[in-house]
Amino acid sequence: MALINYITQVQFDFGAIACLQAECERFGIKRPLIVTDAGVRAAGLIDRVLAQLKNKDDVGVYDQTPPNPHEAAVRDALEMYRSGKFDGLIAVGGGSAMDLAKAVAVMATHPGTLKTFAVVEGGVARITSATAPLIAIPTTAGTGSEVGRGAMLILDDGRKVGILSPFIVPKVAICDPELTLDLPAMLTAATGMDAITHCFETFMSPALNFPAEGIALDGLWRGWAHIERATQTPHDREARFHMMSASTQGAMAFQKGLGAVHSLSHALGGMNPRLHHGTLNAMFLPAVITFNQSVESMQKAKKLERLAHTIGVSQASEVAPAVKALNQRLGLPSGLAAMGVTEDMFPKAIESAMLDHCHLTNPRIATAEDYAMLLRQSM
Image (cartoon, rainbow, N blue to C red; front, top):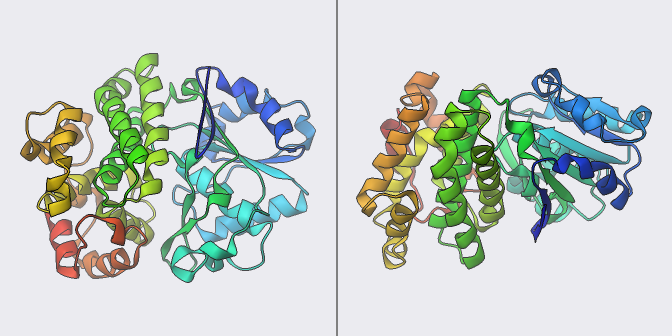
């Protein structure tokens, strides 16, 4: 078993879940609240988590996390946390459960509504080390939220906002690929493309963080080389191992910043929570790669050439078409229209994208007209 100490500590291997009790003891968590969703619980994964804990009577379970976590769900989970006098959280699931748990960890220990802690509301400085301890156990290989310093949540006013702080990074991530073996094919594909997009966008971002770029390229290689096998042969343990690694690496890397793909995905996801975030990313990625390719910093650093080498195509111009072809092979939608996005949604999506925290870390800052073009090209 490898212990990786970058951003936070990561216990990574098949069977890593066995260290859960020891990690709870290390961080003084005696009464944890498990945050998950109904699907993860129905799949029997919460029973496997509970089997690792000594005092099951002291453990609570909140299993009503929605696919795109919103403020009402945060309030419900927070009420359970406070009424049960819990002293820490264990997030089990995909990015939604982990993001919801992060919000509860902040609000349980700080005054204010959820909006108070949003980046766009100046919330970064309001989050302190008082944040409740959180252990993250991913059951998908996509968001990488188990090592991320952010959480995406939908406010009561409909905005999808980011909460960012080093204090909401989980104390430890327990990455056990065993927990992903029964993930359905389309969820494997969609979450896997989320991880691949994180690697692409981080590498293209102009911010200086060379270790993050190296991690992004290695994560991209792993994800690109194994996503089809994981989707088509769910119990391929080697493929599942590399996909979970790609997911974790993508989020380790995106401390550097993301870009226009995520600005648009956050915008549409806030408007319609039924739109899957990873699938949206897959739809936007080809158009955004093409949009970025003319930027001088991209050309000077030969970024597209290096991305081409990583995914095994011969030249930079083949990168965006290769992503589109991969989406097709994975059986993902042909575009936004197939997901139910309509052109009347464009004005509000563009307005939200330009206010998103990922907008300014794209290598080419998009105008409203640029975002309209990217939406049209992704339909």
